[in-house]
Length: 424
Image (cartoon, rainbow, N blue to C red):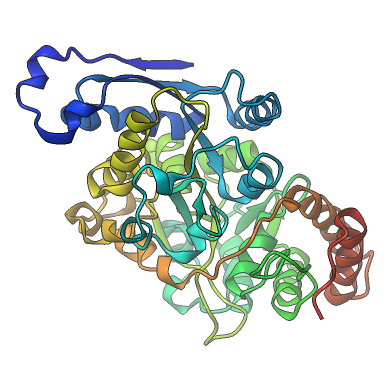
């Protein structure tokens, strides 16, 4: 899909003053799916300030954006657009291999003051020394989405679920009280998302905070994998890929989904007839007094070095990501969760949301942003994730005596694949 927005400039230009006159021409953006639609939604507000800039958003699909960006950077920037959407977990792949492919946003106006408006966990993978390769976009603060009626049928109060053991107990009750309903689903055959969410909650990731050592076999990750195994063994967490989970929501056969908060738009758009039946609550923890915040997913916007209109590209990026107006437009229209901390103060965030039974879900969700522990993807995220996916499957099927043994093996395999040392 190609989304092109062209605004007549004559009528708007008379009401526009200041630096907006300095920006003109055309810029093109590569993105995917709802992210592309969200960027398109901000163009009207951007053109109110910059009427002489034509913005074209191209929806190429997630994998195509990644593949074509790698190919374009390898070809010296040939064929690349002005702005590219880049997932945080994959960002360091680009900076490590092609440091000259993207503009340093600090040269274009990305000041320390602007950067400080975003949480550290969103910036850690986007900045190298004094170079800022990309600006934080959406984030994925993790919450539990749940069907109020299924929980109520089982007499389960979500406020009573503080630990993953509590979640198991509640899940058994929910399944017993609602015929044909499972408590939650995870893509055990194609992803590691549940493990990564729980590990991030426990302050652990594939690599350490500096991105120089392998940390996947540290205590927090072991506790996370133990919790996943316990839920799997109890039948509370069953296999389901992305499409199967949406189908379960539509068929009303699942009571909960743990995801980054961007999943709000997925539920709302795929099951509009279920308005008023859903709610959210904080993700449980390993212990009753443990942390209850994590992040899954989220992207950034980068400007290419070969862009012929970097000033206009920066004006668009800064409007879309650096203002409450831009960020809240994407939140309201498509459920993309802003990383910009000042968005917490926008009146829309405090509004009760009808779909969610008038729960002010964005207050609850965005309030966790400053408690998320940064987690480095590094240039070796893909290598590590493939190893952990295989090891997780083997552990769930009884292939290891313990989570520690499984993750020790994973750490050794990642070390062989990357040459990185294992943290002691």
